[in-house]
Image (cartoon, rainbow, N blue to C red; front, side):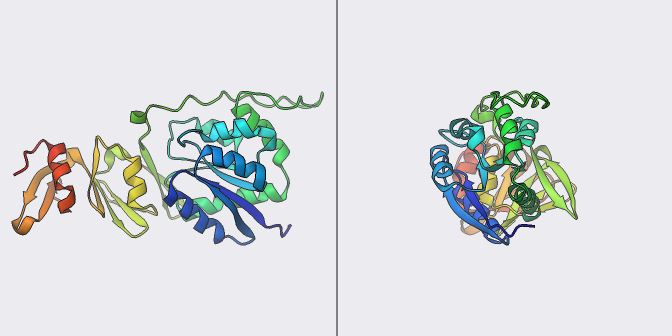
Length: 280
């Protein structure tokens, strides 16, 4: 097997997501971060000037989406591509066909390593040509005509336009458990607690630990249903039974399940507003 160092470009509009990918890439043997981009326009320029072997490409970014990046660069000029997305309502089947792999946010270290090793093999085997047809299919376009005896590349419909903001929230969260993946519906989550880079999703049955920071989760959960009431707690609003006002300005909420959660003073006013409670 070749000892080639894989040069990686990271594209994501979220600073925390970029930082996490950078840490994960740097932890891989024979891998280096060739550059990072925070939006689609930067990504186009970086792909053209840096010539990376592999790009981790966020799908939904302000200004220019990941798909639009591929369209502007041209499928024939794209490096090996791993799409990253928090939006499972996108055409993930098309992404899977068009890219070497995709990462559904939030993902854990093991899932990243699987995608990275798959991409590394593609880089080392120089299979970019075969992926070109698949990226072109994602765009609903054609690249160079196939040889007369070649089978036509499957045509994958282009993905739907980006959904409105109200439709972009997480609906399911994949959780790695002993080598298996369990999908936790967001509808079942009552609250989320955090400790450092980990978050625990609490349902009525049990808790599920994922490697994801609260800020990232807060941005992907529907704000009409979830509210961050403390730097380490996100609660589902319809699970709150009682707002508790203690002495000394301490606040907490009691959920319908009986669980009691602390509310930080800086977030009480927003919580009262969302609950329809008149402030004292």
